[in-house]
Length: 615
Image (cartoon, rainbow, N blue to C red; front, side):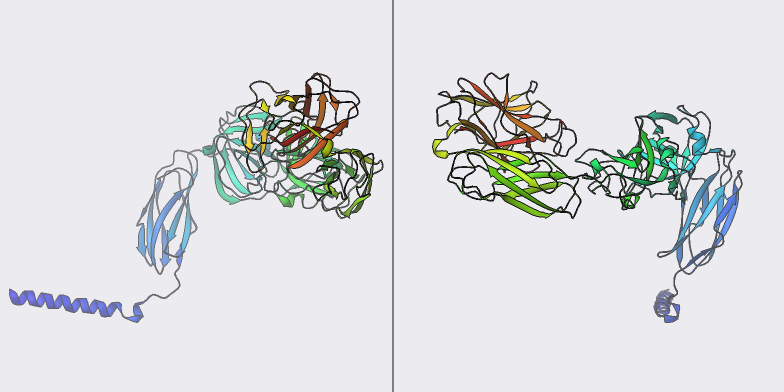
C-alpha cells in the first residue's frame, strides 16, 4: 500500500510539472487580435414562439447578455458563456401582445457584437402621424394607436422653461409634449415612439400639446432621424401654420429698441421683439435656462431658425442653439437705430475749498449706439458755485457696446458756494443735457441728520446715527408706501448698506426731522447718500421734500441707479422758509428696473451713508 501511495504522489508530481512546462510553451499563447463574428444580424421568430439558433466565431472567451426593447424575460439562451467558436440555442416564449424586440450582446473582454431578435405580435400596432394626432383637437385619445416622431428641442441649448417640456416632429407636423417627469437626456434627432391611447391633448396658452404625458409611454426606437428646418415665409409663421415645427424664416431682424439687450435680460425669461422686412412682427423667446442667455442679441438681418410657437396669441420662435441666430449678420433694413442718452448722474461731494478727485464724476448713460463709433462729449459749468471748477470737462473714445455709460471726470477746486449747472453737449446730443448740482461751504453748513449703518438695524424707525450740528430733533428713517408688516431689513457688512425687497413705483425711504431753528429762504437744502440695487430692483428715484408729508417738491433731476454702489447728491435752493417737522423721501419714480425690464418683488435696493444738510 505504501509503495502504491508513493507511485501516485510521484505520478501527480510529474503531471504537475508537465502542466507547468505546457503552460510556458510559447506556441500556446494567443496573441491574435480579439474578434467576435455572428452568423446573423437579426433573427425573426413567429408569434407562437419556438426555437432558433445562431453561431459564434471568436478567438476568446465570451458571455451573452440580453436587453429587451419591449417586454422582459421572453428569451432563454443556452449557453450564456463559451470560448472560441460555438452555437447558441434560443427558446422564445409565445407573444400575446404587439410585436417586440430584444438585443443579444456577445462580448469578450475587449470587443462585442449584437444580434437583434424580432418576434411578431398577436396584434399589429396601428400608427398615426403627428398631423393626424393634431387633427383630433383637444380630446382624450381613445384609439389604441402609436406614433413615431423625432426630438427637435435641443436639451443642450436649454431654451425651455422646464425639463419636462420637449417638442417632437415627424417632418410634416410637430407637437409639444409636457411630460409628468423630467425628460431623460437625448440628442436632437432621437426617434421616439409614443403609446398615445389615453393621452390628453389640450392647449396651454393657445399651444396644443400632449399634456401630462406619462414618461413610461414614450420610448426610443434606437434610431436617429434628424428633422431639418423647414423654410417658411413670414406670413406662414404669423398664421401659425407650422406650430411646434423647426422652421427657418428669412429677412428678419431684432427691432431697434431691443438691440442693446442680451438674449435674456436679468434672470427672467425674455421676449426679444423681431420684425420682418415686409413689416410683420413676432417674438424671439429665450428661457433664462438657455445656454446663450448672456449673448448680446444679433445686430444684423438675415434668416432665423427655431421652433415655431404661440403664447396667448403672440407668435414666437424659440432658437435652439447659437447656430440658429448666427446668420443674422446682414445689413439692417429700415431706419438705423438712433443713439440716445439717459439721465446723467453726479457723483462725489462738491465742497468749497476742497479739490475735486477721481470720485467727482458725471455718468451719462447711452443706448442704441453703433459699436465702434467715435464720440466726444463736453461739459460746460455755470452758476454761482462754478468758480474754480475746470471748464469744460471732456470725454472721448469709441462706443465699445451698444449700451453703456460715458464717465466724465471733473477737476479743479471750487472757490464759491452755490448752485452749479453742468451743460452736456457732444456726439448725438441735439438739445444740450442739463444737470444741476450744489457747491457747499463746510464752514457754513449745518448737518440736520445722518445715518451710517455700521451694524444691522433691527426695525423701523431707525434713529439718526449722530446728533445734528444744529440740534435738530426727532430724526428718524422709515418707509413710505409699504404695507404692514414692513419688509425685513437686510444688511451687508462689506458695503455697510441696508436693503429691502418688494419695491414698486411710489414706495420710498422716508426721513423725518425737526430743525431747531427756521431754515431761511435762499438757503440750500441737500441730501447726499449712497445707493445701488440688483438687476430687477428699481432704477429711477426722485428726491423730494415736504412740510406736511402730503405736498412734495422735487430736489433736482431723477437719479438712475446701477448695479454698483455710487454716491448721489440732490439739492434745492429754498424759495420759502422752513420750520417745524420736515420730511424728505427717496422715492421710486417709475416701474422700470435696473435691467430695463419691470421691477420684481425679489429685487433689492440698498441705502448707505445718508447726510441731510443746509448750507
